[in-house]
Length: 321
Ligand code: DGY
Image (cartoon, rainbow, N blue to C red; front, top):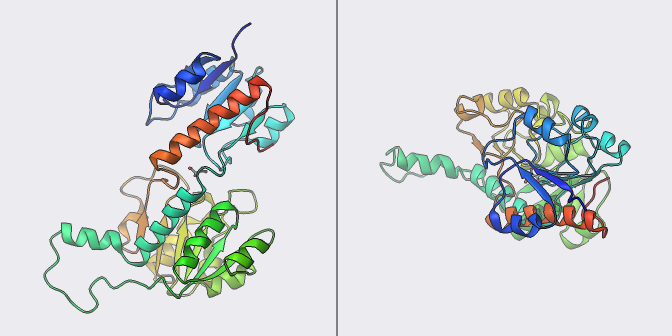
């Protein structure tokens, strides 16, 4: 019997591949750091039964239309806004993501980014590298406290709750906003449900962990930044498109808010001339929320397990549609 053809849109390490290669006809974009060009992906999709893709691959209507044999798309990310899930569903194509395995790692990074922004870690490190450290002084690189402050978590899914767990350990007061209430988090983490406006105006740290949907696109806009405290720090680890970046830039430049820690941007990758990088009150990271060796390996493995399970007939482990 003909083996199912799987197209993998990025170079995957050998060990994971050997398990898979005996059962499948594998084709792969052989570059680790460059996304597959659109025309190559469209061509490969024509004969693929399964695709393992990254968040940089646009799996849209056009691609789905031109892939008559496609049965499953395994996205190596928990977010799947790069895939037209509705069209996939109409065509009977299963879409899977990688939840759970990246929750704690992404929460670690979120907290690291919050702390780095609050305590000006990057600025302080550069201060020494640039040979500016002449003496100790009372307010040298003084940042904002974290303990005892209020964190407002927008999006209380798995990652939001894992961030709340860390915030509790730091003695923070926790507010959250979510489509539905989370009684367990309220009980175990003493997190208080808040409407969006109240959370925005009361929080010292506003943390965005919301998925990108038509409702959350540009959720954080000029009006929202105007409602934040002047001492507020905004952290985004979800998707760049949930923020109106121009409004955020103006809010930071005019000191309407105190700082921002950003792991994601509207158009990635950003270049070194991006306006945010000229601001000392912003810490920018290259979308590394889930980037630990252990977690990235688990994410790849979960994609492969989804493909294997689906074609073996035992079912995909983490379908989203
Ligand atoms: C995701 O999984 O959606 C992250 O953005 C990448 O790890």
